[in-house]
Image (cartoon, rainbow, N blue to C red; front, side):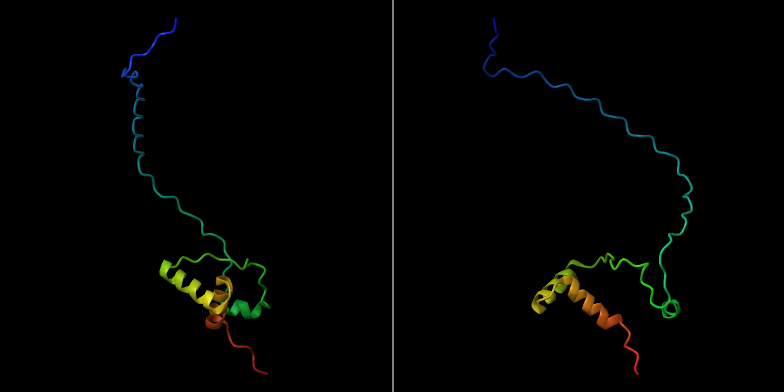
Amino acid sequence: MALKKKAGAKKPAAKKKAAKPAPAKAAKKAPKAKAPKARAVRTVARAKTSGEDFTNFSGKFTVRLPKSLHQALVDRAEREGVSLNLFVTNALSRTVATPGKKK
C-alpha cells in the first residue's frame, strides 16, 4: 500500500556538503629566471642586407587598442567601403613604409 503525502508537508532537508578546507599557503619561492623567448628581431641594417627575406614573419599580429579607437577605425573603413583589415594595412603602409628608390 502506497503512503500518501500530507498537503503542505516539508521535504526532508538536503544534506549539506562539508566545506573544503582552504589550501595551505605555500611558502613563497624565489621566481625562476625565465629564458628569453626566441623571436625574429630585425634591425634596419639587417633588413637592408638580407635581401628582404620575410619567411620568418606570418603577416599577423594582435594589437590591443581602446574600444573608441576600434569603433572609429571600423566607421572610417565602412565610409571608405573597405574592410577594417585593408583600411588598417593602408594606414600603416602610408605611415611606416619607406619611399621607393629614385632612379
